[in-house]
Image (cartoon, rainbow, N blue to C red):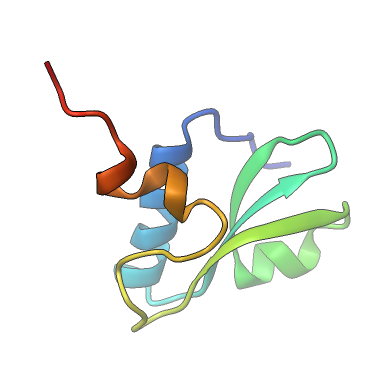
Length: 82
């Protein structure tokens, strides 16, 4: 069993790492208890719980993400540092 992520931005970075460095498809998903996970395609297929896909990172795809979390994790939506 994979440990859930508690930091959304770190989970997105993991998705980009799998996409860019490993050249694999990554899925940012949450389960019915709203736990956040990042899976490769093989891990995603093997996971038997009901999952909601929030973001898919395809190899060779754009680095920006435009899924359900984009409004929460885009640089423009973050407050300016003090």
